[in-house]
Amino acid sequence: METIVKNIHLIKNLTTPENIAKLEAGALQHRKFSRITFKILSRESNKLVIQTVQTKSPHENYADEETLIQRTRELFLKFFPDYEIVVNASIYQENPTQQVTPEYIREAMTNYHIKVKDIVDDTGIDKSNVSAWVNGTRAMSQPVRAMFYYYLWQKAATIGDARRA
Image (spheres, rainbow, N blue to C red):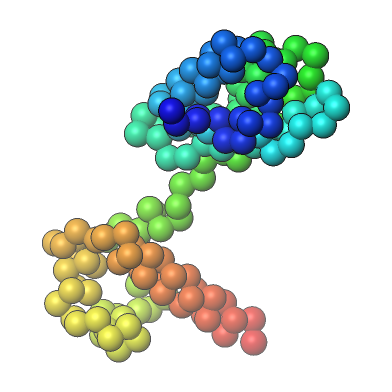
């Protein structure tokens, strides 16, 4: 059977197998509906340190840090009421390359005075592909979005350095 709570072996001897099964079932619900996962980092005398992470959710129901801490404590305190539950929460943060769209690229090209030829010369990618991505006639894969994001970020930094000089 797959364990839902990582490092659950650290707490198995603190409660009954039935309670461990219920804890796992609760954690599975969080993982299934909100992409929240739990990992026990350590167990000290009366303290459990738990890492709670939320990843990209198809339902886009993201929790803030306070909510992740609250959900973790609610889940674990049912089974470990005499323990202090310390939570290291990591909220979901969208990858910045997701903001790259043809409009984003065209706006950056205007702001930084970049031409399609400049991108072709700097990257070695053929003009037909670059033009199609910039004009929105060809979908961009994740690596292409990342390339444009970092290319434009580098251009912005270079222009910023030149303005400060």
